[in-house]
Length: 291
Image 1 (tube, helix red, strand yellow):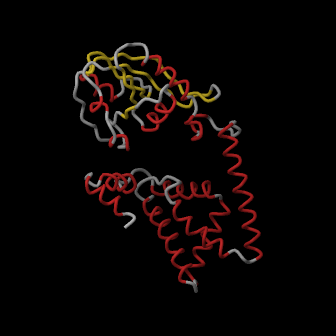
Image 2 (tube, helix red, strand yellow):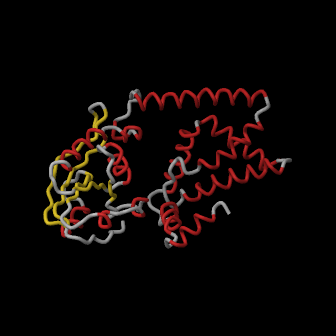
Image 3 (cartoon, helix red, strand yellow):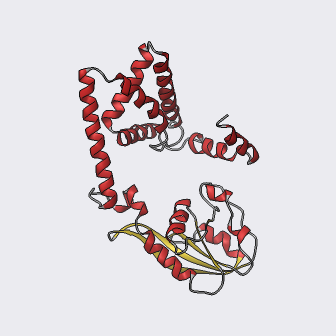
């Protein structure tokens, strides 16, 4: 009953989210299955912490092998079933570290009622200390980078530099009296611009290449724009014109390449974007190119 609205919504939208997730996690295999499995395990060791991960696995296996309590057995089946599903999924596609997280809800509950032996309690305390240290390091690093990671390879650095990039985009947007909209390719970029731009205007996801995202289900540019409007697009810097610009050019009277917009963290480059201005919207919209 609780899940019924999800099913009804998907039925009305051609089972969109189900098709996306099945393709995302169980599509055609790419690359090495062994590497994907090792990446999955490594991600869990980092996300849960090595000691907690080992203790949780031990508690689940113990409950599966000799549970006298049906409630513990059910928790173990839920935890193991969820985790093994993603281990199987990794045989086909990369599994992001947070995907198996629901399995730990049951696993940690099991571990909490299993830790009673002296040796286990010592590991529990050691795991708590280690996990606490890892969380503290991550929070400190998010505020003041202390780990020797290049900005391009640091996931926490992806949020850096957006205020400055939004300032560059706003200069282009505000430099004309013509009604001007803002768009980007990635939903992450769209979200950052929507937050950092003055007045927090609606920012559109182009949705012409790459993965589907939630923005495609909201108001899109051709639904909102009027003939003659301009569009400022923030796209990845490339040696050639981005595919999105090639697709959009026939629908505007002019296309102008703007300034580079580097995302910086303390002077270290995280990524580089390029600002494009498309002037004089003619109406219509190009078809999406499936990856």
